[in-house]
Amino acid sequence: MDNKRIQAVYDGTAHRIAGRLMKDVDLFEGIKEVCVHYGIQAANFQCFGSLKYATFLQLERGEGEGELRYSGKRRSTSSVELLSGTGFVGHKENGEVDVHFHGMMIDCDGQLNGGHFIEGENPVAVTVEYVIFPLHDMQLQRGPDPHWGLPVFQFTQRSEG
Image 1 (cartoon, rainbow, N blue to C red):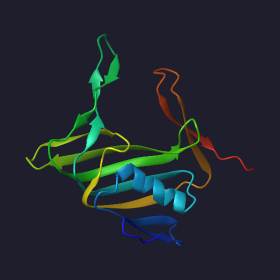
Image 2 (tube, rainbow, N blue to C red; image 1 turned 90 degrees about the horizontal axis):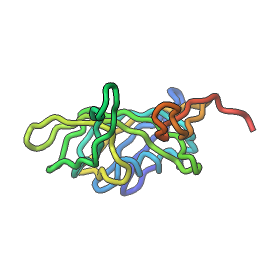
Image 3 (cartoon, one colour; image 1 turned 180 degrees about the vertical axis):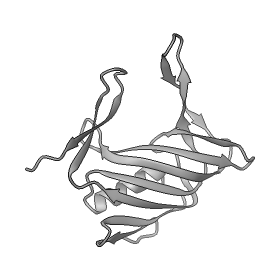
């Protein structure tokens, strides 16, 4: 796969895909596009690079003892260097390809930040380089967490058929 937006090369010996997302490609959309192109149903991936801005949530203390919640959307006030990011690719409850991604970044003012990134709101500034590790014998499907009720990836053995 090599177009004006995304480069991706499959390494058959190592069973992984490496490449880069180019300017203006959304981080999540680019990773999903690569996975669809190669027929990847489940994967882990790592990446680094630059984003025009980053949109993310962070974990916060809740009202009561031991309670947690997520912040509202936060967006960087400048472009950022994505220093380290890792995620999983699986499927939403409706069957669509989905990405769960967390990253650490530094902005143009030297401020470190990070968290749970939001789909469709993290466009590449210069480049994002990635490696995708397909998970051939497992399935990642969003489903409700029994404690929190949030839709999280459920990890199961892939069934044949």
